[in-house]
Length: 392
Image (cartoon, rainbow, N blue to C red):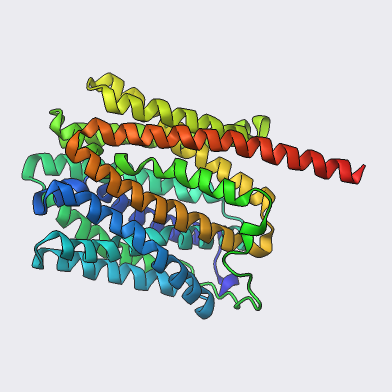
């Protein structure tokens, strides 16, 4: 089946999946907490959102193992989209945060697990038919913006129940898109490296903790920024536009980050991303005027886009191909699982006391992550010098 797809066909199929996938994300990230707040008490919104990240610790390795065992990512992605739709459809039938934590804990984990699976499939098709990852993935960013704008405007006009209905409709769309993605069979790898093998690489544990902590500082933003900005008097549409500013800044940084990393190196750019996090989260904690919040959102170019491209570059250069999948699994489980889960729950408890505290906590984590990034830079440079001296 691998050779039956043309460049155009593979690009259209994968672009369609990213469009459907990020159409859901455009609702889930900026608007979904607003619907949850109307269904359960604010104190438990963070718990419900955090559980989905904890569930990834189970879902990610299990689905990765299944994908390897069947040799077909497409079948796994179809199953995940169907399960997600079923879980979302069941939510109105239950009351209480415990039921919501179970349903969205699984549903959110199933949804987010589609990211590494689809990214891996896209990179594989790039090897087979030469499609460009960025040109396919960018349609996801476009879908994120349009979905968030449309649903945000409709929620302002007709109420927050529109948010739930939009989640259900886009989940059905994801099922259709999953059926359309290329079917590629990959023979199982014999004697596959254990998941913990990358931890034996020089400085990799420090790198893992550093990038996971910095990425996880987005927990308060994803979980509570919409609620916070709503309390300041901003409409769902304005809140969505603030999110769009971040997405546009992200797209802009993706277009130039390669040149920045080539010029200055991945590790110095991780330090820059950490500093950007300290500035961004302090701004959001203290400012209430729309122009200043807008400026804070532009720092998404540093806190996410530059950081993400830097960590991918770091792993591609320093992690052997034979254990790269294990390294990706460790990074995803720690950053979007353990750390994100802890910080989301912590942000929820702090937000209930004072909204500023949750964002200041993220600034503190960014400061710690920046210090770890500086330490990583020193250790890796020292190791590289020692290796060079051995060869002389």
